[in-house]
Image (spheres, rainbow, N blue to C red):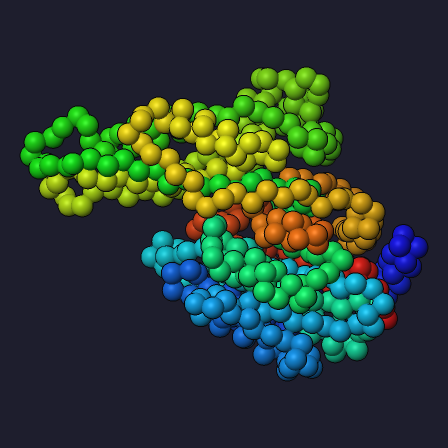
Amino acid sequence: MKKSIACALVATLQVISPAVFAQQATPGPMQLQLRDVYRELVEINTTDSSGSCTDAARAMGERLRKAGLADTDVQVLVPPGAPKKGNLVARFRGTGAKKPLLLLAHIDVVEAKREDWKRDPFKLVEEDGHFYARGAADDKAMAAAFVANLMRFRSEKYRPDRDVVLALTCDEEIIPSPANGVEYLLKNHRALLDAELALNEGGGGQLDKSGKRVRMTIQAGEKVFQSYRLEVTNPGGHSAQPRKDNALYDLARGLARLGDFDFPAKLLPVTRASFARMADILGGPVGQDLKLVAGDPPDVEAIARLSRNPSYNAQLRTTCVATMADAGEATNALPQRARAVVNCRVLPGESVAEVTSTLVRVLDNERITVTPMGEAVLSPPAPLDERILGPVKAVSDAMWPGVPLVATMSAGATDSRFLNNAGIPTYGVSGMFNESESAGVHALNERLPVRSLYEGQEFLYRLVKTLAGGR
């Protein structure tokens, strides 16, 4: 296995010179092709409220058919009763000497209101060196790169040693969802997804404020996703006769207590290793704090300082945060019902039941009912062995010499958990660099640097060819 990987690496690195993936003043043919695919994909609304993953899946499938993939190898699969939740599964056929490689990306996006955005969220805008759109980074950049690369493979008459399977799926952003694309495909079309390993979102590159590349990451586990419905009910009454037992006040006071609460810090092995690595990379006061926290025992004051940064805080502890709220029936009536949603991201290995108990204790009001929304999906991370680390590091080093590769835990949840539970080791790695605190992912004005899209395409092109072998 190691010998075959090494041979493939040498062949790939010899064929493609560094000049090919360096950012060009004028995009080349492959970049223009990717931009066209990317534009079409991001401009198809795939939100849960008013969009259609089926439309996006069909559009991408049509591109692959026109590129030369057989009709029988390009399928749009729609869950019964969910006509807008379609998924694309396409197979680029190899010799069959090895088990397939699966490429996974989700094509649904979170909601985006035009009146809140500076630009139309469903029009691809290129401005000040960035692409702006809902899904520009999460996750249509990776999806578009996969599609464009399969088209490129076809034009090159590439013949891999294994089939390369592309799955563009829906409802990754809706948890829980009865129409989650990966769950649906595993349950009803498992043979289509069967693979030796898979690539997915969850790892990428980090840029500092000046645009300098700080690190490349590969996902080594992720937090457990669990949301809760909070509710307070009350007989209500006339607003002219206020009462102290107001449902909205009860809920607000409980949420305020939650906002002031922090779960205990806990360093997982991957977090400790990541902090120690980043301490040397960053240096300065932050690097010193990372070093102190990675020590044994961790420095309590350094933990407190790092916890002020949302990114580091998410790595250090389980988090629970209010994300939605609604209350009342009329402007002149006391609220009969107040509701909120609290979303928790639980550290791997911690008990979800214990988090539920802690949430109830912190809210500290028996009138607030706490109901889990769906059942948390627990999933062990895929092993980070030489099968994946060797190729990722070799391609990354060739493209970005001196930029370290760091294994990290993802604070967000991905569909990798379903594949890992199904026995398909799945790795989060995209090769796309972004500004971690200002990219607008799940927020306003989502963006991705232009160079990152094109470089990410090249990174994935080379990584897939290395893992798939062939000629």
